[in-house]
Image 1 (cartoon, chains in turn yellow, purple):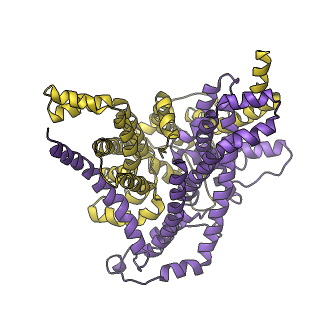
Image 2: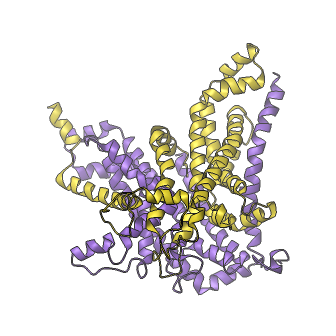
Length: 297
Length: 290
């Protein structure tokens, strides 16, 4: 009886259910499969086909920067592709370091301090981070021009970090809230100095939180497009996002005409690897945070 | 360590973060409001020597047929994306929360993929779908004896919507899946004992309990769509299509400021977006505290 009840309460997938699932999977995967195949195809185009030979040539060309196909749009730019990858790493690492360095102390302090208007300050911080980039981008350009941040990778990282800090402060405050105050007090009583309490006791205890924040901020630096679009104008300083877009963007009506698909797909695959790794390693952690009251994007 | 010193140290800990936030988030936002009342230009004399013009930019925007064209495209883009992202996300959420279905962890991993990879890759991966001659979509249409479409030109707005919904349904999936998973199983078991139909269970149990997460999802999706013009930009470049087919509002502000050099006008449009997003954010904060 119990078994029957269970069966009714949780019906297994019907035939229609499986058909819809297959359609969904095809919808999700077909474009990605093309990307993956074409990255290894010496003569790829914008259509699905099984390559006659498999090669790593495209990846070599991303880093070696030799001249690609005759007349391809990447021709003038390919010499910079390796630099785009490095630039993206620089921006992502700098974003990560700035974000952690600023939001960890702030998150800790907001977790320990009690004062009037704290709720309001926390909400104000969150709302600041949620204001649309589109409305801030023009004054940001002016501000960046004033500060000398145009064509400056660290400037880009600082601007991106300022956008991620609000949510990261919230996440870290949550982690610090779970570390009991008594541990710190014990350390002080045992003669531990203030700073070494922070570095030897509090920070290690918040380790998982710091790690999550570090990776999330790394990814927002790695994937950001709009901030570099507004602040970076010289091609050797493009991050991958801007480089991919510059190869793609054409005058109206002639999209995709002269892209060197092999190189573009190889670069895209390289570009997609770090986020995928991070998400699948930290999946449980990230899901929890994302589904909580804080939203990571 | 004396209590007062401790408190002072903690206050010092907050200041750097607040300073950066103020300089790079708050000041630009306030500046955007101020600039929107001036005739500031991106280049030339008016970059520094601008003057207050009152509501002129807003009047100009509201009287500008291009602004309304852009609004129409934006509305079409946002609503179509909203519906698609929600429906696909809901379907996916039902699979990854299904209790009997094996392999849902793998499926969930696959469903997450498009949302995880950086946005500038999305238009590339969709080229193979949209291409006119051998593209997958047109192959399917031909196989079904339907006329192939010019996805990359005439149907460009729809194509960008398709890319956006493919890239973004996972947000709805994650939020709805967690909402569905948090419904106590006992509710369904009891209604089964009384012989409730599936539709009844959905109407009386699932839907009421998922209502607030659903509204939250709608708001988050809308905010993402109205703010992000990556795909529209990549398919348009630096000059808008004459009929504005891809000119969603963010891209319009960008073109106005960086191509027509009308920074003040661009800020006015940006401020209109900010007001919409601000109101939605307040509703969102209210709901997520329920």
